[in-house]
Image 1 (cartoon, each protein chain N blue to C red):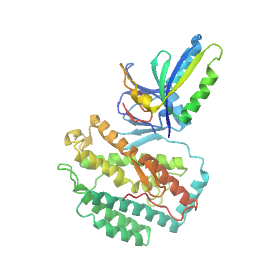
Image 2 (image 1 turned 180 degrees about the horizontal axis):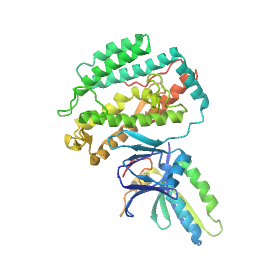
Image 3 (image 1 turned 30 degrees about the vertical axis):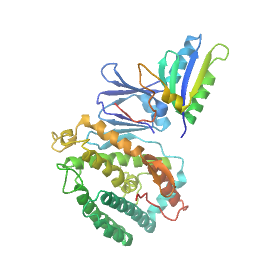
Image 4 (image 1 turned 180 degrees about the vertical axis):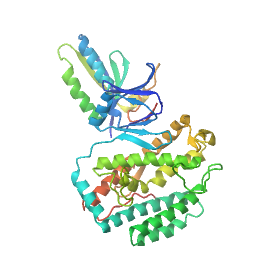
Length: 94
Length: 325
């Protein structure tokens, strides 16, 4: 299964849409800044998310961009303060 | 495949937006927050609380919730509602009612078990592995179900005798014991079999079969006998080999067990070590001889369930157990 690595950034003047966007994106990836998320998704999961984003974002007032990173870029990412994005399908033990 | 194991006994599991949130019951400490799209199963050891909203989501999306006791016995669960493949189940019940076909299937499961058991023993150089060769021939020729189960029982005794000799000092045992297991190695085997049975049950569900109607294992109220059938060919290569590796690499030692209940039990702190090894094994990829593709063991369980469906529907002359060389 091909895996996509996404960085999602957005901005909106509407408080309610900002809250809704954050809530939606939390279900798909990890929050890095107030309006920036990273996600690791399958094609099906991305299609699902895309549909929801299209329904939610106001094309005149908001901006939202999804950057797809190639595997080489993900490997070369330099980070301070947090570990890389976990694979979603990795088992968790709590 | 995302599995979440909840070992924390006071955990509180809820749904927050599209995420699964695990907190400690008293207090707000968040132990885990994970997108629900990535969760396929939640395995709970102990007494975690699951909110109705999460339960509802799991039921709708087909996410399995499984409660296991600390000794590894399965006691409650939310499994998928029957899959849409009704013709598969009708074919399954028909085969169950036809003594000849039932025996033929039971034989395939026994042969799969014996072949893979033999490979595990021979690979590790266990003395006495040759005993299983004779059992293979006897299983091929068994005239009825009783004879077949007799061969299987004797072979299992021989197998565990040889298997025990591969274990490090302090862990060797004289026979397989359960309910309760009387020594640490047996208690680990029981845990591994519980987890394997759960995986088999889920795979059969997805393939559209009824895990409760088996061919080798007789049906009994509340017993997932087809899951027990399917797990036969995987016992040695998945469960036994994980136990062997953990003990021989000293990843688990006698200090990881306690005896306070009167029989040896894996300490709670040692569970993650065991579960990690188990998950690693299931994620390992091997070549499936029939499909000619490399798949994770978890996918192979599903592939075998689908092969069984194909056989039951008459598309394959016989069920071919998954065997390693």
